[in-house]
Image (tube, rainbow, N blue to C red; front, side, top):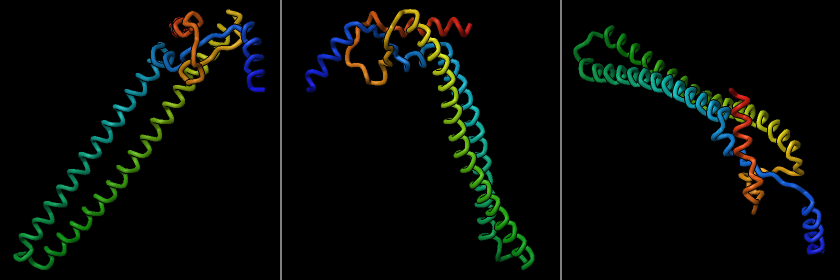
Length: 177
């Protein structure tokens, strides 16, 4: 039964025309794909700079806390009670500020990662929608029955002559001029 099905599929496929596109390569080498990647890289660097600045600010607060703790340890014996209480209050305040800023930094990192992933998905989907229109148009122009994404692993063999990737890239790049 399986052999008959395979034979019937082969006989039917003899009259079909196939095309192959490597969508990953289109995403990586087309102007639209490169523009999207470049935008995401700039956003990533901007977010990394913001996070780096916040980490530096957090390190400065931690340094102030350590310095105040050291000062209290070294000088509390010679201070009057009011000074000890004031310094202890300052230390608690600085520790709370440190904890608050640490939480804010964690939240910023999480939100930044989530935002960057969402922007990446959006940019990729935008390019894919535009490329899909081109692939469908090219398939109709060429009279193809099926166009397969070679990068998805669904293709075991194909004639390089039916690979439309370069043409898709050129048409997409022309559209982006």
